[in-house]
Image (cartoon, rainbow, N blue to C red; front, side):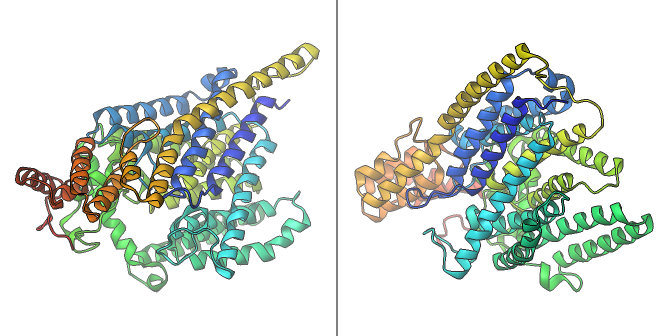
Length: 565
C-alpha cells in the first residue's frame, strides 16, 4: 500500500503543532505567559489541519468515520447553542476566561485536530506524533532540571515554589512528566530503537521521576504509576501465561484500590496520596454538577463556570475551601463540559473519548503481541484521561488528549489487516503529477487555514500584551486604552477588576466609577465586578443597592457578601 503524501503532511502539521503548543511560553511582554501563547499555537495548528482536511478527498472521512464526524458536529453544535444561550459575554465564550482560555475557539481547534488525526495511515506518521510528544517531554525535563539546579530563567510569578515547566503550574507539569515517563520507556523498548536511546533510560527516567517528585503534584505520580502499570500489563501479557497476567492484573487492582482509599484518607497510602486539594476538588466537582443541573440542556456558556461557582457551591464550601476562595474551573473536564454546555456537550465529549477507548480495547483484545507504538499512544492517552478527571483542561495537555484520541482510532483501523484507502497511488506518471499537484494545493490550503487560525487566536494575546505595556507605563491614558473593547482588544473580568482597583487606588474616582459601570454592562454575571462597584467611593446609594442585590443573587450562601476579608 502506498502512503499518501497527504497523510504525511497532516502528520507533520499535527506533530509540529502539538510540540509547539506544549512548549510555547512568552515571558516579559504579557501578564499570562502560558495560556494566551498556547491558544495561538493551538489555533494555528487546528485551523491548518482543518485547511488540509477540507481540501483533500473527504470521501475517506465521510465513508470510514461517519460516527466520529457526526459526534464532532454535534459537539460543536452543542457549544454553539451554549454560546447563544449564555448570559456571560460573547468574547468570554469565544476566547475563554483569563488564565484558562477554554472557550469555543479552543475546542473547535481541538476537534479539528481530532478529525485530522483520524486520516493517519502510516506507521511512520504515528511515530512522528510519538516523537513530537517525546521531544516536548525532553524540553520540559531539561528546563525543569535547569530550574532545580540553577533557578528558573523565566521571570514569571511563581507562588507555588515548585517547578512549573512550560505549563506554568506544578500540577500540569507533574501530569505531563508522568505521561512522558511511560511514553519514553515504551518507545525505547522498540526493537528498532538505538542503543543510545535504550542507554538513555538510565539517565532520563530517574531525572523525570525526580522532577515529578519535585513538582509535589500527586497527579503526576498517579499518572506515571498508571502508565507503568499498563505498560507492564502489555509486556507480561505478550510474554507470559494467562495465569501470570491475571495475577499481575489482580495485584494492580489491589494497589489501585489502596491508592483510591489513600486519596480518601483511608489506609496505608493516605500519607503519600491524600492532600487537602483532594477535598477541595470534591467541592469544585459538586459546584460544576450543580451548575450543569441549573441549565441541563444549554449549560451556562463556554468557560463561564467562574461566573456561576459562588451560586452553585455547597454550604460546606464556605468552610473548605472557604467563603472567599473561588475557582473558574471545576477541576474535572467532563464536569466542565456539563457546566459549559449541559448534557448535550457532556454526552458528545464522553462519546468522542469513548470511541478512542473502544479502539484501544479492540487492539488489546485482537493481539497479545507487544506493540510499542500502540503502547505509547494508549498509555499517554490514559495519562491524559486520568489527569482530565482530577484537574483542569490546560491547552498544552488538552491537545494531546484530542490528538491521541484520533490516533488511537486511526491506528486501530490501520492494524485490522485490511487495505486502508488512500488518496493517491502513483501507479504512473500522470497520477504522480496529480499527487504533486494535490500536495501543493494542500500546502496552500493548510497555510491559509493556519493564517486564519492565527488571526482568530491572536486577539487575547495582543490584548494582554497591550495591558502589560500599560502597566509598565503606568499612565491613566494607557490603562484606559486597554479597556476600550475592539476586535484585537477583547475584555476579561480580571483585567477590568485590576484596572478599576488601580484607578481607585490612585484617587481617580471618576475614571474608576465610569469603568466599573462599563464592566457591569459587559458582564452582569460577575460577582467581583458588582462588588467593586459597591466599594467605589463615587458609587451612588442606588448603585450600591443594586450592586448588593446582585451580589446576593450571585452568592446566595455567603452571610456577608460585602466583607473585604
